[in-house]
Image (cartoon, rainbow, N blue to C red; front, side, top):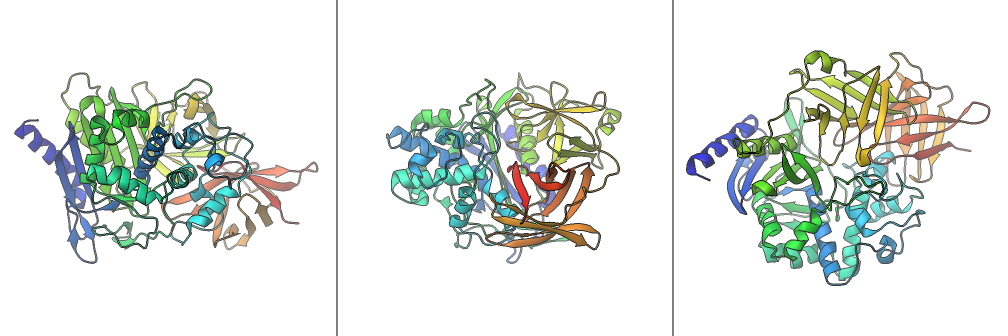
Length: 535
């Protein structure tokens, strides 16, 4: 890279960071790795608003789910030593887990195709959000109460933090030492990642750690988080250390080059379609380039680890500002780095505005009660929301719109004949239609309802503006949560969360006499939860 080329990229990074280049705002840091060397590292914003400390080269952040590839690497290192096999059933190493009626392997966990419900969502539906204290044992209890799955193993993909918490415990059982010790001894120290550490407790003092913030009004508040952290997201790191980890994919200093290949290996589902999720990395195509990427999201922290190995480039973006879209920043930085190279596909254009306007509104898949909201932002960008989490829709080369959201396969076609076709994981296509513009809640929802797999009771009663729900679970309680009509027996429960205003889609289940006897609840990562009326 010439000096002029590097200067242009530095200026591109500064432009991307400009909105947060002020002392009264938290911000972000961007690193660009080229051919194994950190070629560029720019930062903006404050690591601590209270102390007025700027983000700098040595600032550390919670990288959340970017930790997952390290947990997978630990499993693969232990497999190379003969201490376990990726095809082992998880109960072989964790015999206390319940029998869920299907054989779940370690590889299923690494590839997010196990069908296990996500523990963070289970905790939230049982009244305990990320801002409240929860121990590792309580998280394991939430997994252990399950008696069914989202789907049969290796038939679909659905992101699940539960699987990676269990993988971290498998590492400890097979290695005979804490996950933090194994990672430090076998990966971090050999690679010189001296500012990276696994932190099971969020109360632990970590040198150089930026404070995480959420925007609130014209200012910011500290982001609350109280959950114990394991193999799903316990690492604190920085751009320089993640650049050292990225270099290991080509040098193989730890685990040989086979380790990097195994982490990025896609494996087919039972129907033959390739899973986009490899092992702690999502593998996709972007502008004609193969990318290996993962995001991290934790209250007040966001991370994008984006590799484009064919181009010899990796972009690392980390923020301590909960409102920054690091996924978008990472891809814009990659755009700048590959611009003008031969073989790079142009960025597709959005469909005309009238076609986009035809997408807007509420859509319903009536069989499951799943809902989808689509709107256009002020600048005309389409944005979808499912289960309360909004994500930008970007044009794809095949004419469809795809989710700009990590580890979330979602591609929709423009509506035809009043139907909206959405392709998700394993090539599954779901047909949505417009939801009714006026609706009433099903009669008979009032009362107390219990879900054994949550060990929680949802009590629905009149509030000041309609029915509301209060939840009492094994760790905490919450509410009131508004209960809103969708159409017929389909309704929605708003579930305020630390990271976003969530919702679950619910559908009444009726007895032989036609009365509401219970309901099924589907969240983003925990589906098919059954509630029955208390006796």
